[in-house]
Length: 354
Image: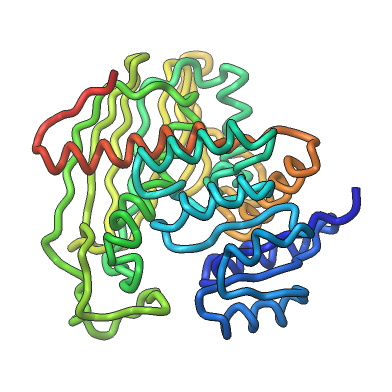
């Protein structure tokens, strides 16, 4: 087949990672761009040599030339656009989280099943990091034994991006659904994707967006508004799985903490591993505990390389060379976990899954 013609829907900041990665793939032509801000769509089209740009995603989807789309819009439109794209016969790469609710996730899954073999890949980009892929090989070959515990933290001291990120209506939530989705998925994927049994979660909204803070810069969304914030500052949870394993997680946009932190670890009965902030394995040999550091180019997650791997993998799936390692079913399960944490917090009790 010739070059795969790709359309990118949503031309905000994360779309640059998609555009750059598609640009680097010799099998892809960036063909169309869509954004509700038509000027921004036109700018991106000119920058990346796209033939067409649109204001409405429906107009992009009816173009028969387009084989696949990346969806980089607000979370509240992921389901609607994903389903429309599948029904239009397009392959889909949708940014994380898959959508806003479990109900939407199940509707997307149904659309995939009815799509005559189209790929829908969920943007769990950390699965595609070199550190993750190296560790996965150690786990799959049994070097860590049975993984029974994992813990993940993604803590910002000051980092509520505002704009749509801080608007629950558009985002579905705060740091849990924006940052937590990455570290939760990373642990769950490395644990072998066990079925959830119960969740006990808490969310807090004590500090707001702290727009009063001076002398410390942080990333701000294009539509940042210092007066608007309807999402949590912090979320934490303990998740139990049917196989007896458990996962602890905490994530924040803002917290009275000394410094930013990302820390992800998994533990098995033969060994353990820290994957963030840098990959290191821990095991035991000849009655001595060993710390093992692999010699790889990047021990931490390399954002650019991870995105390139993700896009290249998606393109291979579109060409029919392989099946995605990040399918819709995984998006549904992670959505159940995210929604379960919010529900547990709201009810003030542990919730159980059938």
